[in-house]
Amino acid sequence: MKQSIDAVVFDMDGLMFNTEDLYDQVGDSILMKRGRRFTRELKLAMMGLPGQQAFQVMIDRCGLDDSVEQLQDETEALFVKLLPREIRTMPGLLALLDRLEQQNIPRGIATSSHQRFAAVALAQFDLADRFDFVLTAESVKQGKPHPEVYQLAAEMMRLPPEALLVLEDSHTGSTAAAAAGTCVIAVPTEHSRECDFSHVHAIADGLHDEIIWRTIRHGYHREVKEA
Image 1: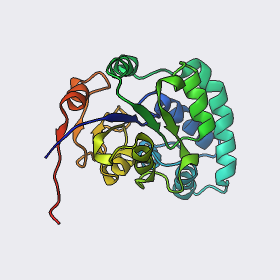
Image 2 (image 1 turned 30 degrees about the horizontal axis):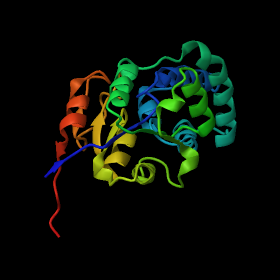
Image 3 (image 1 turned 180 degrees about the vertical axis):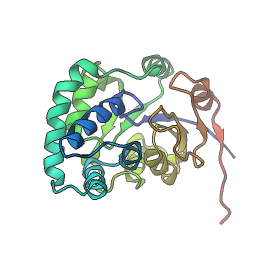
Image 4 (image 1 turned 90 degrees about the horizontal axis):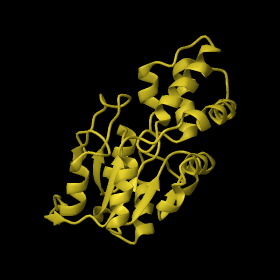
């Protein structure tokens, strides 16, 4: 069955901004002080999870005595220093937003980050007003990979989930979007290219990849389960 795309929902970390690079620096700093290393395996296990769950993974895997709250506070303090001078938009983001605006296609954000961090990141580039809504960790009871945030995004758009195109860079996030019934295009970076994206509609080379715009303009074929 051919399905049209009527709105686009963006993940934020690693998809809109280079925050995964910053997470590497912060993770290394936090763990080196504790005699541990922020390995690639740990990074992939944490990627896309809400903050509390991600830090619990770090605690469990590294055998830390710290609480989730202690790690969150330390991380936030480091990010306050890094963010203003090192955050960048990912290649193709601004051009894609321009095209969506020109076509009056609704846009939203669904991130596992906390509202305060999302607000600061978006403010760096005056992007908040370019989206119809921003859903954060505080918006839902269950974070990714649970589909709640993308189910809520569909409600906010007043559209069925299958009419949404979701752009995600992580396995955790793309799993949430697929479980919600949306059309998902993975946009992996060097941090997530080895992840399993077998459940997505397509894999893009970046936000500039024309597969994204072709899907928006022409829709996609989706399977309809028999009753």
